[in-house]
Image (cartoon, rainbow, N blue to C red; front, top):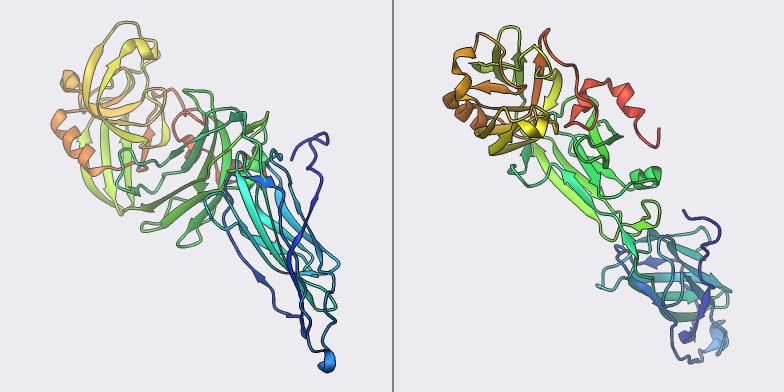
Length: 421
């Protein structure tokens, strides 16, 4: 994944710990699996000895030379980001065990012919790996060899924020909740990063990754949305084994990420700005209808339209007009606030606008309701519930990255945002 001037260290042959001839070489291979963590390589040390067997029954002669084994990367400051390879010459591998500095196994696969073992993961920065390899020769001589190596520490790293996070949830989300990872530094190696990401569901839900720019921070972000809304009850696990991956420009991931959640009941919130009402539906049935007031249609205070999942329930929020370019018009502590976009669209209590509820859109862009209705509504919704806003006086659909606007494009269009499409 790097340019040609970054080469692997020279292979280091391992010295045998023992060599013993046997009558019948085993045809079965034992390969220990493990999970990669940051490590580095050191030269191995071992002694060797031979033992004779009774060759009256056709056994191998004593003192046969065992297979030679090499491991790459090698050394104390090996470059991270490459798979670990264990190679046998003059024989085959009968077992390979690789562990990281925490004693965790590193999984791998064996080539046809049982001569090369390759790790499933890449060597991570700042880590030490230990290798034990068992071999046998055509003549039946067995050997066991050991080595260790260490990778250089990462001078620059990249980290991830992910949704749904633990804030504001009990591990259960709404049917429109995407999986979202935002990176603290630009990701130029998008395809390689995306290849590492796996979404496992309890019912084989179809979906796709897509890259966006996060509206509030400009960060690179990758979201996974299903083709259609999640089925209630779906169990979802994100596996992001990013340790050992260069995100680009020499910024390494030095840890893995994973997250699990369950999809709750199908709840949908429908906001009709033309009739000044909000309807909460659960499993297709109306649970509650609430009179509301949306954004004033005159000027820049109109409300966004389209599908906007609840990002997070923020409770009481200090809302200041200066933060959304409206001067010093207001500075309020606002209760029961559920965020829909990064640009500042909330559903919340707005008792100061009571005379407009059900009659007129007169807010600064948010969807307001009475404190009593807001309290009940806030208690009933969850992160990931889709809020669909319709009406003639809106300011259009939010940009991708401004909240979770993924649902405002077709699934076919969304898939084109994948770096692997």
